[in-house]
Image 1 (spheres, one colour):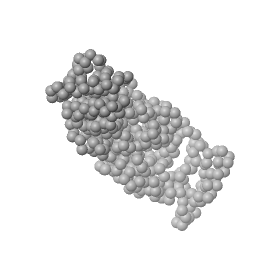
Image 2 (cartoon, one colour; image 1 turned 135 degrees about the vertical axis):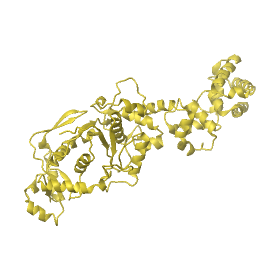
Image 3 (cartoon, helix red, strand yellow; image 1 turned 45 degrees about the horizontal axis):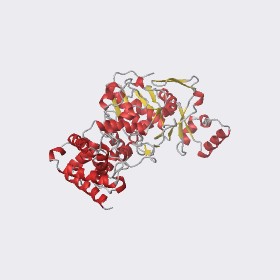
Image 4 (tube, one colour; image 1 turned 180 degrees about the vertical axis):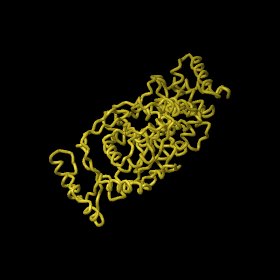
Amino acid sequence: MNIEREKIRVRFAPSPTGFMHVGNARTAIFNDLFAKSNEGELILRIEDTDVQRNKEGAEEQIINNLKWLGVKWTEGPDIGGKFGPYRQSERTDLYEKAVRDLLDSEKAYRCFCSVDRLESLRKKAAEKKVPFHYDGKCREVSKEESDKRANSEQFVVRLKTDLNEPIIVKDLIKGDVRFETETIDDFVVSRGYSLPIFHLAVVVDDAAMQITHVIRGEDHLSNTPKHILLQRALNLPTPFYAHLPLLLDEKKHKLSKRAGGVDLFVETLRKEEGYLSEALANGLALLGWNSKTDQEIFSYKELENIFNLNNIQKSGAVFSVERLKWINKQHLKKLTAEQIYCTAKNFVESSQFGGFEEEKIFRVIEVEKERISLLKEIPDALSILIKPTLIKEKIGWKDTANEDTLEILRYTENYLRKLNEQNWNSKENLHETFLKMADESGKGRGPILWPLRYVLSGKDKSAGPDEIAWILGKEETLERTSIGIKLLENE
């Protein structure tokens, strides 16, 4: 029977086996948004029973990245709670009790089959091109013999799957999904008494923690009938299930750990690529979920207020790095230069520009924030603060002769030198001043402004000369203009 409680309780249960992939992060975000939008509770549970695969520091990294994304839980290994402990490695007594209950009620049995025998069965199934099913040999072992052999032989515990009618998973996203029980063999639930398989641990913990809704990836849908069988055998309630659509790459294949040349781990996107936390959460929330509005850019609080499980699509969700970058760019545009600098400080300080005065860095960011998509691009933008190496042939506008370009730069230098400091207080002032300078020259804006832009930046593409001059200040602007003039004078 399904759980019916007033308080919604969901859980995010990662394994500490490495960096957290964007797929796992999306699952955490959807669980959190569902809980918050329904005044429910999110529980963080660490599924660390696979000791050999656990990585040192992985749990801490998971917790830090979830907090960075804006995910907040009410119970977990870091804050405790009334249903703890919240690491499965600390809950083995519960699993052992469940295993013994299954054996005592004869709903499960010990299997003493060797690895070699099981491998032989698998090979035969492969030769026949049929799924491997355990043949039930150890079902025939009497309870007395099984109890005796358990004292000296290694064993696993298998659940008896005798149900003749199909199992219907009432999925809140997929709808009713039918599984024929003849496709499910007597599956393993534990190695010995105290080493539970994923299926048993999940079922026991979800019940003990009073989880009402299990929201997880579609790849777990095939596990659900096994979980329902275990719930029935242990007389535990069945939560509501909601299986999220798979994440796909742009070729509609299952999303791997890389896309667009980028590792798709939260840690990488955060510390190496330079995504903002709200932007990444925004982008992941839109993978398979639709707000039913024209809005695309959301704060985390806005997502909490409007999230609805009914708006999650059934089909796979396509992940695009370019789309995620665009979302990040929109979030960056909303920030002040100071806010961006504070967020990007690690990127700046680890570059050669960490020693520059903050006011100049702020000005660069103010100019470039409309162009950059990721925080990692800021150090490259800051390269404008270093005097460029100029190529004489690139200074002039289109086919303008060097002597004419020289005359233009001399005119520009003379004009700029006469400007008072007030003209340099804002890029808006300089913009109007530079246009006036070009118009008064009688030569046109392109021939006047192109050489100035190039001698200030040394780049084929850059911000406008007025913006660069505002960043550099009057003295540096005149110095770079003078360098361009000297280069043209040395014919």
